[in-house]
Image (cartoon, rainbow, N blue to C red; front, side):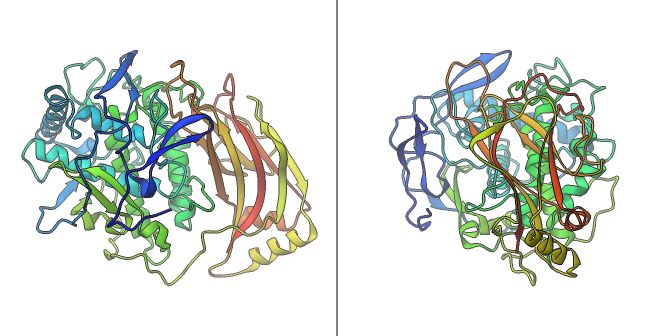
Amino acid sequence: MNDHPDTPRHGHFVMENGIRRRDFVAGTLAAGAAAFVGPRAWAQGGATVPQHCVPPLPPGQPVAFAPPTGAPARIRKSAFELDAGEIARLQKAYAALRDLTKQKPDDPRGWFHQGQVHCWYCSGALDGLWGQEIHGGWWFLPWHRAYLYFHEQILGELIGDPTFALPYWDWDTPGRNVFPFDAYGKPGDTGNPVFDPTRAVGPTNKIPSRFVGTAAMKIVLDSATFTDFGGSSDQEVGMGNLEGGPHGGVHVWTTDPTVNFNDPKPDMGVLASAAFDPVFFSHHANIDRIWDKWRKADPAHHTNPDNQIWQQQFFFFYDKTPNWTFIANNQMLEPELLSYSYKPPQQTTPPAPGPVVASAASAVRVAQQLSAPLVELHQGPEPKALSPEPSTIQTTIPPQGRERLRSFSATSGPQPRTILRIEGVEIPADRGALVNVFVNQPNATAAAGPEDPGYVGTIAVVASQSAGTGHIHPPVVRNFSFDITGKIAASLAGDNNIAVTFVPATGTGEKPAAVNLRYKRVYIATRQ
């Protein structure tokens, strides 16, 4: 439910799956019923493992965000292209952020509370309290855009530089699938304010191409709709290609170069602690840049949702002053509306930018909702568990389903999308998972990936919590939708059978030792 922005409410406690949880309307970030008790965390191998991440109690009613006017343009550059002065400025800003936590631990702008913000929005800390979940659906991109905006403003304020801009880690640029050590600290550089001791990557480690290579990024950038690219609505709820692929892979790789999702390691490898590593913000600046790149590559068709629930959704943050502030999605549809932009990597020739618009109007509309299932592959009373071995489910396509698939394949121009839908993917909160999904390729192995026939996408879930904390959180539940329109859908239309194969893997193409994932339903539908 959404309240009008003029009357935001601070929330209340509810019971959910036996856990006492803070529930907030309209995505509020903090407040109310429980007293703030100050920064609390404990060390785990150098990581910051939050015990409590309820943000500081707001001083009063929030103020509405006012779009910047007359502000200097901030240019976000690749972390690999920063000069010595820009690197020094980045370090100075984070040194000030860390000093603020030491000098004024209750100041919501400090390093510790900035990390807590992300913890609060992804299943919380050891006390089991958290706000609205912003992962796994269509809140993922706009919430992180706002988070980076306010974080960037705070850093600039602390060093008295309104032109300060976060760098982006462009792991999608050829040759840059490595860690940006010059900008964010070499191994062992413990005195560097942007260094984090939990990183495990070295100078010879490369992010696997299955996450950030040409084929993987093509799947992301070729997404036909925001639903496929950035996630689906409250009614459908599903993770988009950008979050489920490169986003999760880079998170886990930073703390574990073997990219074993089933063995999460904080900081970056666990959502609750990820934002305590400063490179988190550079990673997400690149996620935000790719959203901007996707939009401007085809402004007429690559549109943000025009659904008013999405447009008018607002989120709460402390700004640089610090004021308790709420910002709506329709105030940040494009980076330029927030007075920042991205300087393209020097190795690439960017497309000409499209016009900056303050609405999501488009000549072509593809609805967010799925049709009734055309083909049901699995739906049972109990979730179906995966093992480390590949597993296949298959069924015969009913005549009416074949006919509809055939008609969709023959349609030219804008057409319904054929969607493979996997619902109720459930995993313990202190575990992650990586499962590649193939259609009509029952012999696929863990070594197969985006370049291989029949590959349609990846189920990638980054752990929300650190393992071994002794506090039981409810399992994480996600839904996934994979667009199989095109040659795969066309081949299905001429065949009586369909097989879907789940292949658990690590990011480096090995079979994992264990899998803690179950799913409830698999079917094919259309999005009309």
